[in-house]
Every structure is written in structure tokens, then in C-alpha cells.
Image 1: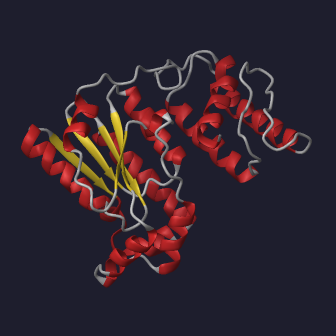
Image 2: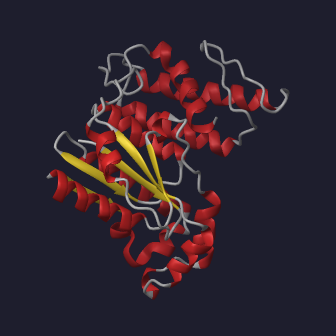
Image 3: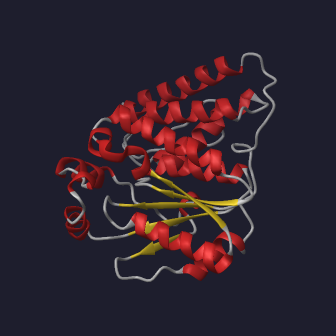
Length: 276
């Protein structure tokens, strides 16, 4: 059944909206609904975890694992978390696409000042520390409905009523996106698949870094072995490329492709979607 990805600034009302949607789907539509909650995982360690990049990465891994365990054809899964990284939302979109079930984005768009006031009204052990709150706001990559992994998107201001019926229609009355080569599970027939995956992605990363030294910022970068250039529109850092490469490798290990000659093109497409 469908996946609902809730996203927004810290203390912007994400959990409240997740509960509202759960109650509507259960009472009005008699659906089975599960909320995967970031708060339930971090507990009182919230500020410690969200202030440490390694721990935060582990948190995202745990959230994704919980979603994948729950995601099936019988249950509506609502991911109640910041989900502020667009690459992470893309991974979740691919997961729902592989299972051939629709998804949607629920964006709680609250002013930063209002979110901070709500944060201060929480019990002390549930509040975000100021530096953690500011850091999450600064790193937040807002969803864009023109991206297919951020669409359909329902944006909610603090005083808005939950658009229950439109959300239901998006989740249950439209066809799921068809699987494509990047999400369709393929048999691992190539014995040197992992070697080719590592080599190919490293070569693409190297070409991009070298090209950025001589090209004008925003120029397309031609990649040997790919019919599609890298179109990032800006200069990216080695750290950004390394994270994207690691995410692509992790996903592709679980969903290997039959023809390793297509790895370059798939990685280029992934970079354009997540960093472009």
C-alpha cells in the first residue's frame, strides 16, 4: 500500500499531521496504517543524534529500514521525520516504485519563527537545542513538486485543514509509477559486478572533479560511456559526490542490473536527479 513521506522544519507540525492522516484513513477509509516515527527512535537522545553527522546517518538508515520492513500491499506507511535531504526522499520514492505502490509528500510549511515558538512550548526533554534547530533549518532541502519523487505534494500551512480526500485520491485512485531499470530487481549474473560498480562510479566522480577545474561553472560535463551528460548547474564538492556515490552503490548492490555496461548511464542519471 502507499507511502506518505512527511517533511518539514523541526517542530513544524509533522507528527500532528501524521496522526491526523492516520486517524482519517483508519476511521473513514478503514485502512491499515503504520507511522514510522523519527521521535520514537531518537527519544531523549534527539539533540545528541542530530548534532552528530555519523549518528544522524545511522538514524536515516534505521528509518529507511523500518519503512522497507513495513512497506507492502496491505499497509499504508507514514514516515514522520524531517526527511530534509532530497536524495533520501528519492531513495524512498524508488523503494515504493519497486513495490509498485503510489507515494505522496506531505510538506508542513511553517514559518521558522513559528516553529521555534512551538519548539519552546514542548516539554524540556523533547525540545530541539538552538544549534540543532538552526542546523536542521539551514540544511533543509525543500521538496519541489516538479521532481517526480516529490510529487504529488500537499503543502500545509499552520492553519490549513488536512486535505484528506485529495490525499486519499492520490494514494488510492491513481496508478503507481511503472518500474524502470533503476528500480526493477535484476539477477546478478555478472561475477565481477561489484568491481565494475565501484570502478565505474569512481571513474565518473574523477571525470566530474577534473572537468570542474577547467569548465565554466554550470557547464554540462560529458562522461565517457554515457549518452547523457552530467547537468548539475553548479559546482559540486568532492564530499557531495562521495555521498551520492556511496548511496548509489548501496542501492545498486541490492538491485543489481544485468548489463554492467549501463552502470555509467544509471549513475549519471542518479547524479542529475539528486545533485542537479
